[in-house]
Amino acid sequence: MAFVKNYLLPILGIFLAYYYYSANEGFRPEMLQGKKVIVTGASKGIGKEIAYHLAKMGAHVMVTARSEEALKKTVSDCLEYGAASAYYIAGTMENMTFAEQFVAKAEKIMGGLDMLILNHVIETSLKLFTDDIHFVRKSMEVNYLSYVVLSVAAFPMLKKSNGSIVVVSSMAGKTACPLITPYSASKFALDGFFSSIRKEYAMTKVNVSVTLCILGLINTDSAMEAISGILNLEAAPKEDCALEIIKAGALRQEEMYYDTSWLVRTSLLLNHLGRNFMESLSLRYYNITNL
Ligand SMILES: NC(=O)c1ccc[n+]([C@@H]2O[C@H](COP(=O)([O-])OP(=O)(O)OC[C@H]3O[C@@H](n4cnc5c(N)ncnc54)[C@H](OP(=O)(O)O)[C@@H]3O)[C@@H](O)[C@H]2O)c1
Ligand SMILES: *[C@@H]1O[C@H](CO)[C@@H](O)[C@H](O)[C@H]1NC(C)=O
Ligand SMILES: *[C@@H]1O[C@H](CO)[C@@H](O)[C@H](O)[C@H]1NC(C)=O
Ligand SMILES: *[C@@H]1O[C@H](CO)[C@@H](O)[C@H](O)[C@H]1NC(C)=O
Ligand SMILES: *[C@@H]1O[C@H](CO)[C@@H](O)[C@H](O)[C@H]1NC(C)=O
Image 1 (cartoon, rainbow, N blue to C red):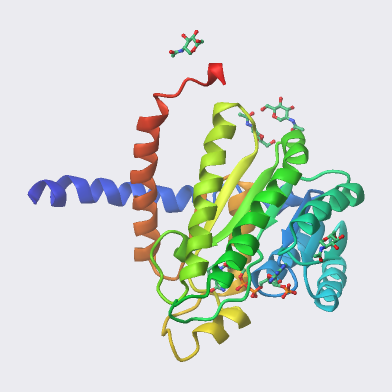
Image 2: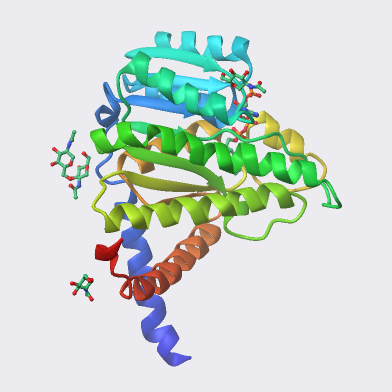
């Protein structure tokens, strides 16, 4: 016990202080100036705020979601805020052909891509899971599979630009979350896929960064409506959350944690350190020269 108190905790404290201090060091809004960025789920909520920040930083923004009217508004606001250019293509991420063609059209319009921000999710209400297999499948398709399809389609452009993939996930993608079981499963899947692909890029010297964003409760209309009367928890502001997502992507961080509780953020960080250690142990056994 004395060892923990006298040595381990102070060392941990210094480490965490350093981590939090240096996390966002080096970010400048100019980093996004003239960059070509796709934001999915940008008709409302966090995605719309991400698009607005990017516009103010002078980026080229390409947004998508289902509701065309809302996207028109996002685009006209972006142009007003100073976007280098702003376009939308409306469609549903339930349709993988749309997801693929969306990226191809974005390429035609923007002529390349620097950052792919994957953010859309299927609407989810809080309830006990019984037998809605249809919703499990839909959640996996919209929240997970379409992310994979979009990243595959965007990969050649991102490889060329040394670009970034930014995946918006949730506490529910790192810890068990009752009442949103299908959502939680789809967010865990994102971690499995995108954290593994990040290792493959490192092994093969592909310079495309992958940032997984782990968010706590954020005060978007959808979230507030979903938890109303069921979950009593402080929500963080969506505008600030959106900015932190962009920063983490631009700084090519592997993971970012956004939650009002420092205890939650610290637990996530420690969990990450433990997992990284485990992963580095197993990576030693790979020999990819024969692949
Ligand atoms: N808010 C929170 O508390 C919270 C917490 C943790 C993580 N997150 C994550 O943050 C991200 C954004 O959440 P949010 O609260 O901002 O959500 P939101 O306000 O509900 O926005 C969701 C976006 O996804 C789009 N979308 C929904 N279904 C779609 C479909 N089938 N095809 C294409 N687009 C679709 C919506 O537009 P249309 O309806 O027009 O299609 C909308 O633009 C999500 O990845 C979420 O998991 C949020
Ligand atoms: C899926 O999207 C493609 C491309 O936008 C479209 O041609 C096709 O009709 C869509 N499929 C369905 C079932 O809506
Ligand atoms: C991408 O990074 C490589 C080194 O990893 C560098 O040689 C190349 O010039 C960079 N390309 C661009 C477009 O920045
Ligand atoms: C990867 O690309 C980024 C962005 O262009 C660059 O800053 C970084 O130095 C590159 N890393 C390597 C290892 O080439
Ligand atoms: C990996 O495999 C190649 C080809 O078989 C071999 O030449 C090399 O020595 C191996 N590397 C290690 C570290 O075992």
